[in-house]
Image 1 (cartoon, rainbow, N blue to C red):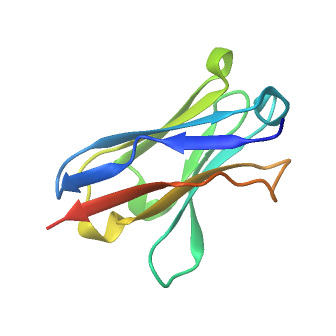
Image 2 (image 1 turned 135 degrees about the horizontal axis):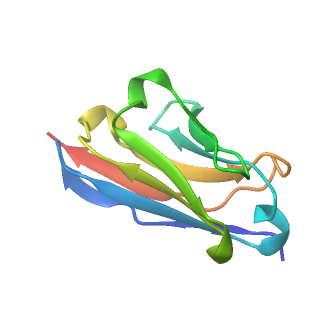
Image 3 (image 1 turned 120 degrees about the vertical axis):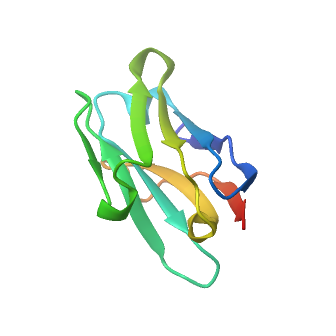
Length: 114
């Protein structure tokens, strides 16, 4: 079965932290680069961060130093640690596998209050 399941979102005050998780089916996760995206209300879905199968990472400049992407290959899971959260980080967060660009999970809602 080809699927992605995101979790870990919630309501947090500005300055707080959350850790998002995305567990993928083996066929998606194995030897595949993974990305996190987010979509704020009324806006397009934007790329946030990515990690290759060997652990190389990239981030949108505005998130460098605040967000950290990582992966646990034994658990088919990719994480997004988010620190110093701002109200502008409020969005639904999704993960995606680069070799399966049309496969998306349900996302996880992150709401940051001021």
